[in-house]
Image 1 (cartoon, rainbow, N blue to C red):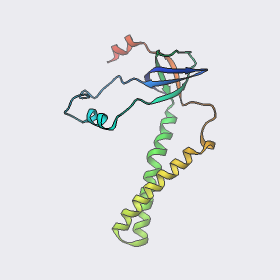
Image 2 (cartoon, rainbow, N blue to C red):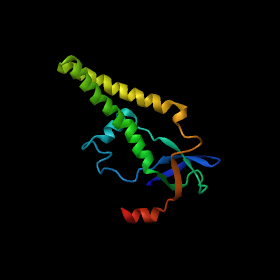
Image 3 (cartoon, rainbow, N blue to C red):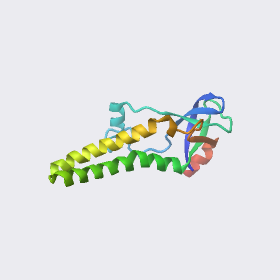
Image 4 (cartoon, helix red, strand yellow):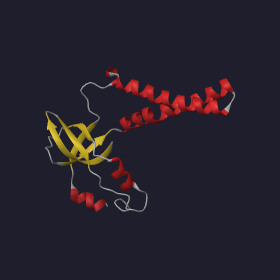
Length: 153
């Protein structure tokens, strides 16, 4: 299980909404030189994303907790978001090259295959039959112990 620090922002019944707390930075974040993540964040308006989780420990709003996600969920997301579109790209490039015997058609086929791969994933994931019933992917595991977190750094 992959664990992350979070803070509870909303609570209802047996579920909570949380935001992940960033505990580690690249060391350059916030400066004008380096990788540029701070600049991109300002330009694109990066925001915190809220996520729903099961709440078996009955955490309340404002509590700092450790939230866990099963590795299988992360691997499935990687499959859908990376592998299937990439497979579409390769198949499209190969089909364009084989059918028309010219490089530029291979490039066109690759672009169409990538786009088709993304559309297939979007259609599959937007179908309600493919969504788990009354289940969240994340789970509140325990309260965050900030004193032990600072010892690990």
